[in-house]
Image 1 (cartoon, one colour):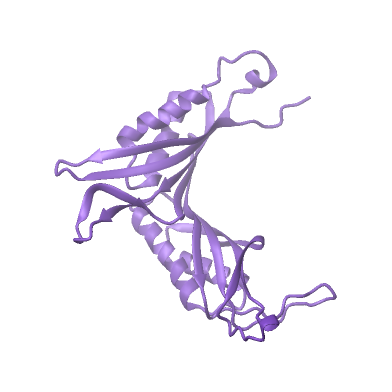
Image 2: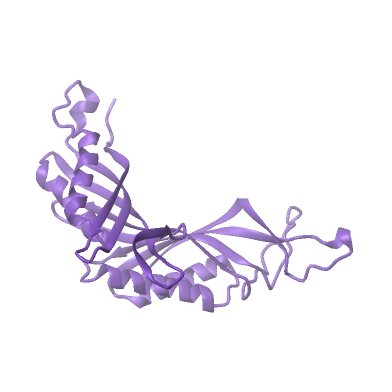
Length: 280
């Protein structure tokens, strides 16, 4: 038998940092990280020798300790700091894959329109994330967002597709287009401002979704990816996953009533799964 490949690590390492400003205002950052290591660990798989294995509990502790210094507004900087720490600290590691999701919190605004200094409300389900894959020779930096619910109630159609004896879906020139978007973009180099670049990319994605007529999710996805690449020269490609969250018109004919594209049935499954990788 041959050990073809191996990696191991720690998933779902959660940490929340509270930064207390001198003014009494608190700033919080909550993240969930996963660490995967590749390197000279084959002895542990093939024998009883654990001398090269870094305990996954140590990985968890490392992430939490480094959060004291590095966890802040820029996910990419924290991810890079963690990946570089493992490579510097342990010679048996050849590659680190570090992925981090952010749980956004918004400062609570009182009825008097005052931002409360230390009360927050959870934002939508959309989760910004960063992924760093680092060796001693090179680093790959990716950022993105997942579980971003977006919906447009007009300017979406689906016609002209092949039909057979099993086709029941009617053509429509006016439908709801909804998805839970996941977008991952790859930086060509370390950015001078990840925050600015990410904001430009996300704005381009959402603006294209909103303004462009959609003949299909496939076409909309490509236009969105192209707009993201045009928004900044700092990324080389983008991977978009856009499951088609169906909203089906409710049939009112049994009640002798018309449904003029007003009442829809939300359905979670099964759903269409559309994705593409767009590069320069």
